[in-house]
Length: 81
Image (cartoon, rainbow, N blue to C red; front, side, top):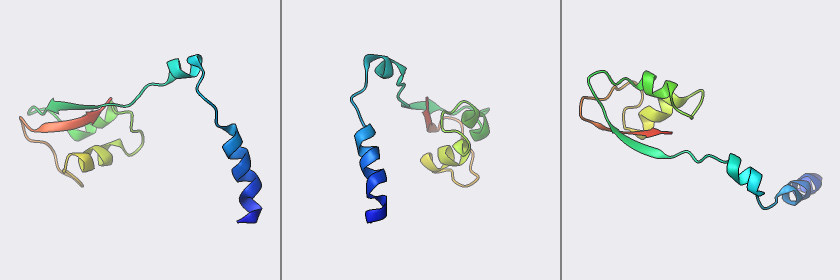
């Protein structure tokens, strides 16, 4: 409530339009579809993911393989790059 008002105002005032330099630094994360092969493992896909610490769990969840499933050959998988 009132005790957080100053912090909220400071935060709101810190927003600004991106400069050209900031815009050039931004890299969107995009979803790509891949076909799984017999060698495709979720742990290996997670190592190359921009999702960070819990990438494997998040990729499994996105692909209906949570909590421990592995893809079958030919299965379409969503990965993030």
